[in-house]
Amino acid sequence: MTIRLDAGMPERAIAETVAELVEARVASRIFARDAGLWGAEAAAEAAIRLGWTDVSPAAERLIPEIEALRAEFAASGVDRVVLCGMGGSSLAPEVIARWHGVPLEVLDSTHPAVVRRAVAGDLSRTVVVVSSKSGGTIETLSQRAAFERAFAAAGIDPAGRIVVVTDPGSALEADARARGQRVFLADPEVGGRFSALTAFGLVPAGLAGAELRALLAEADSVRAELAADDASNPALRLAAAIGEGLPGRFLLAVRASHGADAGLGRWIEQLVAESTGKDGVGVLPIALAETAPEFVRTPAQALPVAVGPERSEDGAGTGSEGILLDAPLGAQFLLWEVATSVLGRLIGIDPFDQPDVEAAKVAARAALAAPARDAAVEAAPIAELADAVVQAAPGAAPRSASGLVDALRAVVPARGYLAIQAYLDASATRTELEALRAGLAASLGVPVALGFGPGYLHSTGQLHKGGPAAGAFLQLSDTGAGELGIPDGEAGFGALIAAQARGDRGVLAERGRPVIALGCPDPAETVRRIIAAI
Image 1: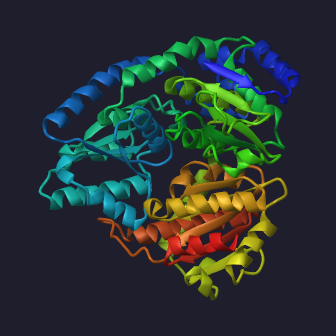
Image 2: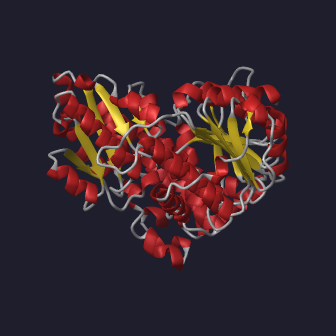
Image 3: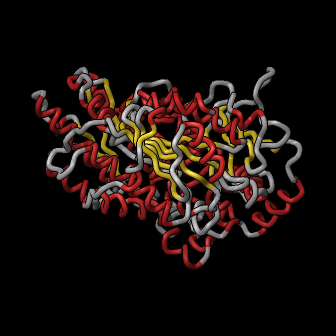
């Protein structure tokens, strides 16, 4: 494992912080599961959230069971693995599968077109992994219901094709067992975003064919190094380097170099942002391509971070300042988990709770129960934006594409960031949205994040609401998505995703965050017209 702090970073200050962490034995106490490291108020939560420090014994028992089930499915011609999960239940297994070059379909959306496409696949070859730590995740339960109906309609017994991963004692465990579905139980003392090397990461990735023993070996190979109270501990150095830039440099511009991009940046986004973004402080990583404008001229509020081998040829680099982390995937997982925990101590927050994620869920449930007239999309249409309708809060709604760009420029806080929150079909709009992200970053001169709803609600959504008041938000909703019923549900997927968007922007507005919301009957065309106006 290599960690390098590029020239220009305050090495002396970082060394002093690391020395304080070493003196306080922070690293060894994390691995000893010392819940008092984050203060008295966080102790109760921390006491039941440190199981990730030693997952190997449970993993070693679990892997043979996963391998046997995979062989059983393969013998029956079942080789398409679909994962229904949100946040920590989907990001880690997606990274593992991509890193190992095995196919895993991830369903982390409630957009009707996305769900419809997933259940329309070849069900004769399909096994569905349903992952929910709490057992009550509305998105995941709705997706499971859709697949149960689809399997039954195809003459396939859902019990044999649905695999559930959840915590022991959850309502989902009892219900799945009653339906005859296979259940894998996770460690209840590991929080969702720290669960990469537990059943939540291993079951779906292993069924897809990932080399789980190699992944665990990578983590085991660095455990002693990360647990050492030593100035060379890379997790302590990483946390100290990030913490030294706060509060000004609260954004991490994360890039994967030399083809190492398997979605690791998105996993880092969730782990760090959801863990640290509360009480008005926090760190927001933004996963970016190497060619992103943020690396051409790095904004003052952003710290470049490269994961993967350093580039040896000419090309995008970390610039004159930044962090390089070169380690295999299993080691990256454990490194970032330790560093994030240490960072929580440095900035004085509980890294294991997520209060504002629950606030968004409550608001979404309220919006779903009372789908009243949507004030965020009732303004007059903007013809040049493919009949999109828009509202700005605060301020008057822009009436043109160029006016929208001007409005965004006006509401982004000084040394802040813009987040595009896309409640859209990612496969139909990703290309346009990536171009919009890059165009706005170059034009506005600020880092721009891109998240697809409702998935980001279980990830960076915590920081957007509970972290520094430095963000502005452009929310895009698909008003032409149509509807797809949720079996035994009072509303369909279209109503659900619309309620999640309304709930999210309602909480943002309550927290004083500026939001501009667009409802788009043709999202891709709307985005193209905004790009043309930049």
